[in-house]
Amino acid sequence: MFVAIFGSVEQGIIYAIMALGVYLTFRVLDFPDLTVDGSFVTGGATAATMITLGYNPFIATLCALIAGFIAGSITGILHTKAKINALLAGILMMIALYSINLRIMGATSETSIGRPTIPLSNADTVFKSVAAFWQKLGIDDSINNMLRSMGVQMVPNTWGTIFIMIIVTIFIKFAADWFLKTEQGLAIRATGDNSKMIRSFSANTDTLIIIGLGISNALVALSGALIAQYSRFADIQTGTGMIVSGLASVIIGEAIFGTKSVARTTLAVVCGAVIYRIVIALALQIKLFDTGDLKVLTAIIVIIALVVPNLIEKRKEKKRRARRRMMRYQQLTSAKKDGEFIA
Image 1 (cartoon, rainbow, N blue to C red):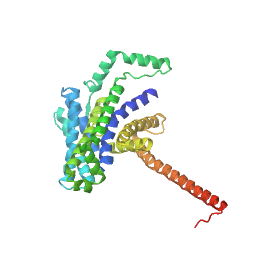
Image 2: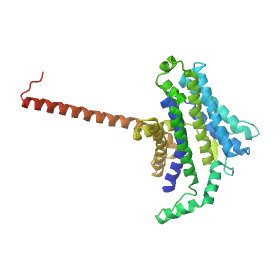
Image 3: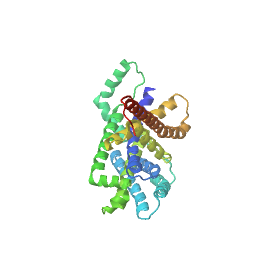
Image 4: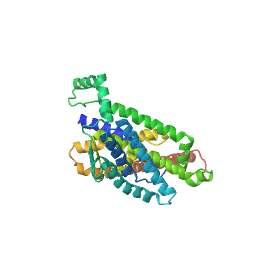
């Protein structure tokens, strides 16, 4: 159980980068971007292909990020310049990316197309390098010995992945906070809130939308590249339903931690991604669901995260109204006792 939850936390921290990208489009830009399902695979396919061809895994991961930025920018161009509906532009790009990703993944095969999976079992990945460095420090043995002394028998092979990914994800979170407070970031936020108003100030909303979508899908592709290296394979189907997972992370985080500020919201998104993965892992551990039920489980979690906060808010509002009526009644009763007349 401990190892399963630990693995879920590791994955949740990596998927949190994708959730931050989804947050930028759906919450900041108010843009229903379905490119995510394709750009996530683009990141994994680009990184896996380059690693297989002998490139440095860190350079491969950076190229995956750039590929995601290009994919998101094209979606923005289709919407702003070609005047295609936002939802349709994302769908068209997602469909196009399926074939493009197959081409990318087929670059290491003889046919150059149609290779749906790239194994990375023996490849040099980012996490393999991190694990090797971490084991040299000897921290893993110290932590695992402490856990065994506490009665935990099943312990992770390395703690390097989770610590490094926490650092990377928190860095991206603070970078997003900083960017959204810059002049460009404020303009993007204003575009999502009221594009007509920001356009009246001579701002180029088309460019802002393209930049916002590019950054969002760059983060999604980065997450895809890291997940492919973490799982040690890239598959053409890994992006299916990814947009729903990202939305689930955003909604769960916002429901639990609130959205009073940008910094608090981005932290909520990161925590929401981790909580979402832990819930999925626990559901699978208690044998209530099979691995094939992940999609319906995700849908159930999203529905609960959407409905429960509304029910809680309605109940609080009902109590506030009852409290106000009681206070008004007490005021009227007190006024009558003092001989006052209320008009």
